[in-house]
Amino acid sequence: MITEEEIALTNVLVNGACGRMGRAVLKAVIEDPELALVGAVDVSEGADSGELAGLTKNGVLVETDLAAAFDRLHPDVMIDFTRPDVVYQNVLLALTHKVSPVVGTTGLSEEQQREIKATAEKNDTPAFIAPNFAIGAVLMMLMSRMAAKYMPEVEIIELHHDNKLDAPSGTAVRTAEMIAEVRETHEQGHPCEKETLDGARGADYEGMRIHSVRLPGYVAHQEVIFGGLGQTLTIRHDSINRESFMPGVVLAAKKVRSLTSLTVGLDKLL
Image (cartoon, rainbow, N blue to C red; front, side):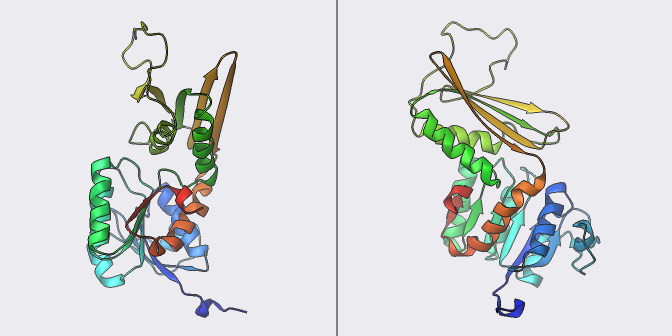
């Protein structure tokens, strides 16, 4: 029988530890026998990460200086669930310290992802980004790409809590990208249609429409609606709570160091 001491633990720092996602990540890391929580960072300091996770105190206190935490703790992996306006700099900082970032914060541009890839290669440190860590959401995206080969008329509706800062969601954008791989670009709807209120038809991605809903009570939900002659097909995924993301987060934390450069999408790990 392999004891805990014989398991090669992956040392993890959680950035954005005090947020709702951050607390769920803390709990998942603490409870996994192959991961070791060595640090927690957020904008306010002093809280015990074990208590934040709803568990007993563990002595790993939240601190505010990410660079100083890297220098002192030398984690293998940084799991980042912060904000779109700070995640890019967090990732570059991690890579320059040879810490592999696992990123669940969405909103990174294609240019920023190219720079992250270049920085990862320069520092010989792999990075991982996923627009959605729920296994069911990954299956939804894969099934949508499959369906689009046969039903190219499609619209995407994503629904999230009202505190989400970016729209459309990273999951919706990634779904549209995957559909575009098998679908020729074309405009949908009547060629003479006119919006009587700006934005009524949603965002346009290569002729597909993406609609964003922001309301209290939602966590993360998406449906992809395909239309054909006399029929529709709807593929929907619902994250009922934040625990739905944790198996994917833990999987990425364990596998990221074995990757090369930048990897995007949980489907690459399944």
